[in-house]
Image 1 (cartoon, rainbow, N blue to C red):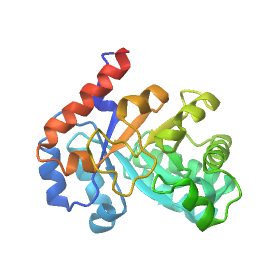
Image 2 (image 1 turned 135 degrees about the horizontal axis):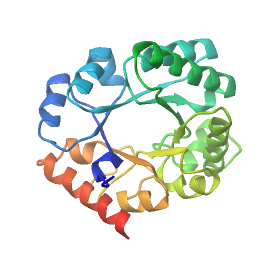
Image 3 (image 1 turned 60 degrees about the vertical axis):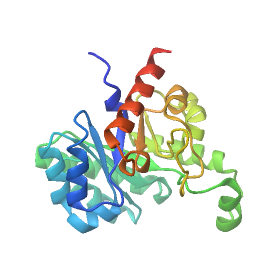
Image 4 (image 1 turned 90 degrees about the vertical axis):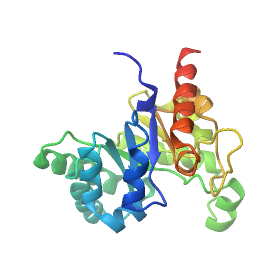
Length: 243
């Protein structure tokens, strides 16, 4: 099968309303994946997922579920029934909640006629720096070790992958097989502002470190020419796979 660099890129549809979303994706004719986060989902509900899928797009539903096991399971069952292929949960919900969420997601998808989604466990958000993580949360464990611990917890629970910053990808890929997906936000090209992302990396470096897919939002959505920037990301992804 021919390698498609666009399959490695997930466009984060954050900070836009529904009309802006559809206007943007109409300009990106080789777009494959989109991320629906809290703001867009709360404004439009499951209908936005169905509308995106009707346009041939694959959906990453990023609601970061974190609750007691029975509530996590119920939420993931409903989320999977939309046809979303990637769904986020918080690893720190614990192994029981992760196991129940995973099983319920498979049930919800099957009942709706879809393939089981991949759950991705959030480890430590990319907005945390090591100093803030230690001082504000009072966790006596280095941030990088915390990420490894939560990824291992998720792997042992049968979760299909995790969300981590690109700075932790290399160490995680050494610990876990390729089948365990490592999806990384915090991707920035040269010259773009970091905004609230702290632990960041370029697309090619993240992929070479072992990332499965890259989540990119504002560098594309806020660009004067989104198609041009998206194509530049695709080119960098393609070239990184050739090296």
